[in-house]
Amino acid sequence: MPLRIPVKVRFMKVLYWLTNIAVQMWGCVLSMSRNLVGTNPTQATYVALRKPSDERIDWNLSSKQVYNFIRAQTHSYPDAFCLMPSGETLRIWKAKVFPHVYYGSPGQVVMVKKDHVVVTCGNDSAISLYVVQLDGQDEQDAVKELKFGQRLQ
Image (cartoon, rainbow, N blue to C red; front, side, top):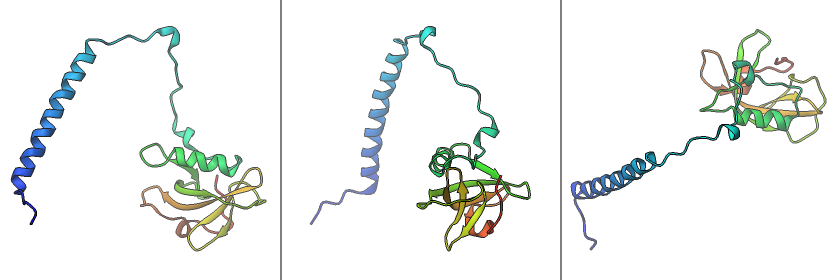
């Protein structure tokens, strides 16, 4: 029969080890703060300030570029978005590259399937959209929000 250790005893052991680790880590942090090295201004890099318009999807790009753009902008980052024909903002949270060549006007919904919609992109490619969100609403399946023939901007 296995030895049963009461929950309170196990909790105290875990708390003891976590406290011990925290004290050791704090010591490391303090020792590093005394050995800080400044940045060499000749080797510094800079980046431009991001604007909300930087997250807007350009449907003229290839489907792979649009897909990578959406992946880079998903949760915990600013979101990839486009505009609906009504002018509402449509945020796109989940997409996949459509595996076939598709000719059409970039940004047009050309196919509505059971679980996704297909939107044409540049370079005779397309992307499947699965999860989208209109302003002020919860995330939902793209098939509930997008209709065949709509033109996303």
